[in-house]
Length: 341
Image (cartoon, rainbow, N blue to C red; front, side, top):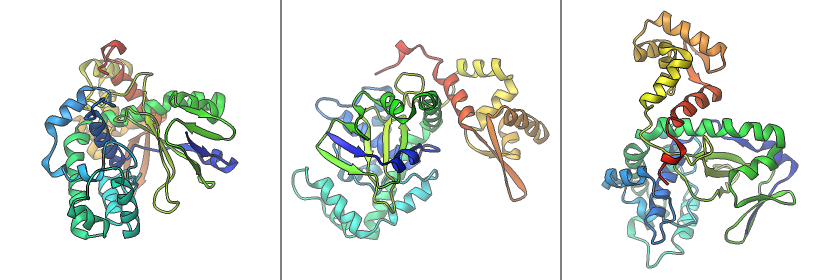
């Protein structure tokens, strides 16, 4: 049994992540692909897994040595940064002591000696770190990027679905909805697994729903300096497992959104799945900047988007409510029974 103990401060500081993290999702997509290759097929046979095998880039092969199908997994990929470049800089800046300790733990359950390049990585070799960074970027570009819109929609829709539970029943009720292996007991959270016990130290727990991950919840216990304590769980944006498809709205999804908001305003909301300035928004949708600004004001007044000033310009982005609306309308275009896995 894995147990994480909470103090009152930990409960007060437990919260949802503000946005999905590209590098964390890249790691989870990789681990899901590895789990699917195990003899018993731990991962659900979802369509994106077959597509990922076809698109697998040769440059990503070094990750086979770093991220095996079973834990423990290293924490130096666990950057919550919303920007991939920033997250990869986080990997490059991993202290040598962390590399040595975590790679030793990772290889402890694997046969034979680790390859030479991995031993160089454990010594903090800059060229070996570049190999890892190139592998992560290649896998991200091939597998995660085409599905990113779906990842973002699933993330926000899952959180929006759970917020009423948190408001009505508190964290104990919320934890009970995340997975049937999680149980709140005597000021702590229990999960089936290898016997271990952790203290959060008053920092709380970051809750991260993942569209790629389908396994039981994973505790990522941080070091208190570089990495936060986190609980990663499989997103269920509409009560069903998330399906990280190609990330593009279906025709039916576009029709539903247009019926609700009007075609132009629906196009503006969809375009803001990626934050944009007014000029960029106008160019993307094919309208004038004045019209884009007017539609943005209506969406902002409805709490569907947020607008922030950046110097002499402004930047529009979806609020959690806007993301949830966009995600739900995209994801509910299929009947639950049609979902693979």
